[in-house]
Length: 434
Figure 1 (tube, rainbow, N blue to C red):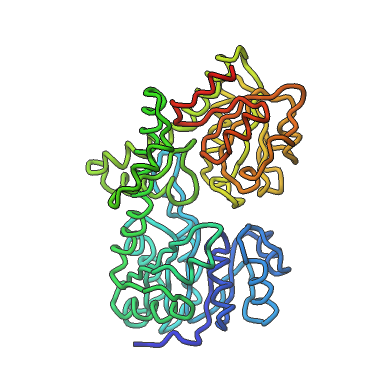
Figure 2 (cartoon, rainbow, N blue to C red; figure 1 turned 180 degrees about the horizontal axis):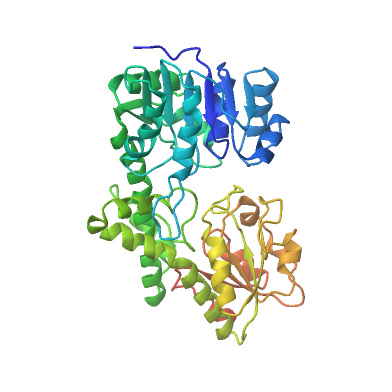
């Protein structure tokens, strides 16, 4: 087996996965060149500035650049190893858009040399390596599996804990040949402390999509339970907590929808791949995609129950999950659209999204909350959990509060004079404070 130790790496794509991965290798003493077509992002990184938010990334980036192990540009360079970490979104019709993968692969072909290793980290539909990458790589005239080695090692990390999970999580590596997989394993052992499991490329592709689809189906189940609970005087959060005491039960939690670059996207890969065999997967996706509308309708119903026609609504949280700045596929933005479709006026605030990226976004919490009739918590940022309702200034009247994440302390908010409601809570309907 050809060794990958002390090899130069070129990382294609410097986003939420590519940049931390590149910096991780550089911090481990490997020379890394990062490439991205986003010139603004490249210039920021070169100046040791971040275009994404991730715990520990700033310090690690500075160390990598200061020690001379990490460089960046808008073009690939000749390297021993290429890691492709570019987006794999879905089209408006929910089919996979693999053009970023194809273009990224094509961009490295002129630089490939005998013995090179190409690794795809992006989450993709099964057969993407075989049907999208390999046709491009064959244009190098290098014999696959003999002169050129290819594998898929999908990222398995969560924003906010990327470095911790890069080190500790097990990895799946699927090679087009056993040697390709072994070479990739040796490379990642530079810093990975979890076990590295070897298989073929298509199995690795399916495993990652399966992992995210499992979570999506589980969340859809929780969302259906939440809707049922509201009709039978049950607090679904309490019921799920009790059910999960069973040693073989792990029900996820409901919410205003599912977002992010993985869970909200990857199940569609399986639906497209085999529509006749993915009824549950498709239904789960549609259920979760329907939660923003359900949340907006619940908000309007609460307002009308309290004699408010129309009304002003503040949405707290634009990121798709807690304590990150990632807006991709965020259910919060869909909730806002649905609220506006119901002729409600909306403001929003997110402490992690520094630049104003949404038309409803306000620069401060106080500005977003002024003279609103209803506050909806859609993202459970730590800053929102720690809010002291006694100090929350909303103007002359106390608005209603709808917590879609079970993140706020009901007693404290009600003691401060707010009328409090929770998604999936049919037991505590706040009727005593109407």
